Length: 235
Image (cartoon, rainbow, N blue to C red; front, side, top):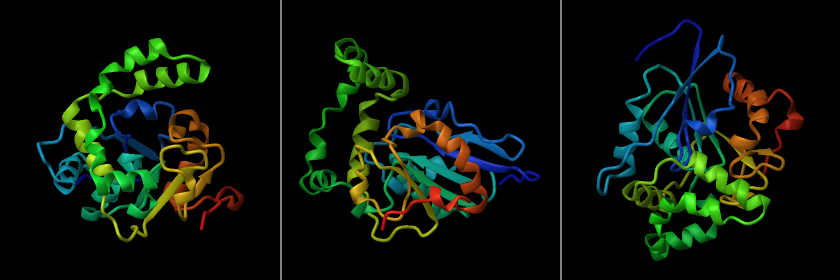
């Protein structure tokens, strides 16, 4: 792996079906950090999460990097961390272990209901934007259209299956977990030991980017926020 004089290399893994565009407003001081964007690849048929993770890991080219993952991307970076020495491991709007998944996802895993999710509906993002009623729905529809870029059914089926079936009995102690108290995908009531962003939703990496621009540098360098009032934990 490569080494650089003084630069901290930060690898960003986007959420399910999205790409690096979700990080477009994230800005880390360039004199100290070098940002790299990881991308989803189409999985092979019946590919294991471990094998897929190792394929993505090939794009990490520097020693002691920082891995940051959003939502399902947070699961991926935790799996990557099993095979590499890191400076820091950060997940955003994600889960640290299986028991933080909401009951509906655990139920879908046990019953196999996740197989019934109509992933082909991803092809209808444009249609959803046209029929959306109300300012909130129109805004959300535009966000979907802009940021959901991967509509391949094989990828979506694989990603949903591996999200709801993720097996993790004990959280990685290195994980720094940042979570919004208004997250509608992974409700805060199921989350433990996280840095809480007040008013943050599941897409806060997009619409609360100022919080991340202010606090990510501190978390990357020291592993904690200097202002203790900002570091509210859920027990």
